[in-house]
Image (cartoon, rainbow, N blue to C red; front, side, top):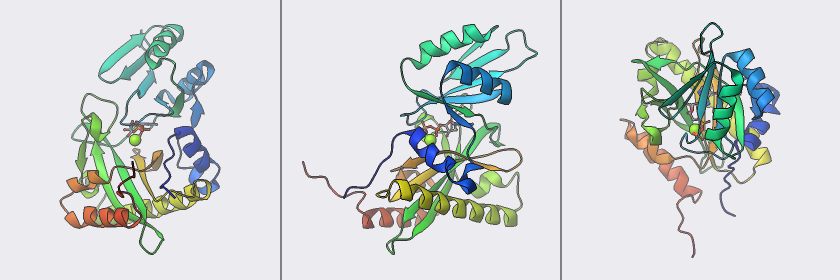
Length: 255
Ligand SMILES: Nc1ncnc2c1ncn2[C@@H]1O[C@H](COP(=O)(O)OP(=O)(O)O)[C@@H](O)[C@H]1O
Ligand SMILES: [Mg+2]
């Protein structure tokens, strides 16, 4: 049986929301529609809207509402920025940009920053050769300075997590924080597996906010293992790769 890949961000988020323990780590997420954009902007002041079937940060838009400003509505997509006097004007442009694709609206998380750039964390969790879920790697992704996403394929810079968290946590707390994230990752994998029984690996995009609360932005099935080649500690990638070989991720497909 081939390894399962689940593309729908909505289907994956739904599984997490159904779990009372994991639910609290998921930013409020709704299907994109006009009333939802308006209501969520009112409530959170900053939201992300993203394609349900998106990858590499493509099509991701960050929307802000600054009630005091002359042009209170603002959004950014790629490096393009737009501001508007009214919600209606903004929504019109938003529809133009997203085209006909299905989108989600998500509560925006204010990511921690490192040298003026936002970052999030990628947590890799895999089925090990003893068939237990194991958190096998964690890496930070510093966003490109002019972008609203941290994806490597959009100019993000991979960095060791310890280096990024140094500004916010003592070395001892950094270790226990990472251990907490590893446990969270394994719990996510176990929960996802109930609904998607043929997954073998997940890569979780974790945002850390200014109160150091971790938030699950998305769960990737079949994440990129080669990102972990960027870590100075080579043993991390080697283990990730060997586990992936063991469950057949790189087996040649018959044509
Ligand atoms: N709710 C959010 N709050 C803050 N940043 C977000 C949010 N959702 C996405 N992002 C940023 O956009 C990036 C891409 O979003 P993601 O949901 O991971 O889609 P993709 O599948 O395209 O990677 C994330 O890695 C993060 O940097
Ligand atoms: Mg992602």
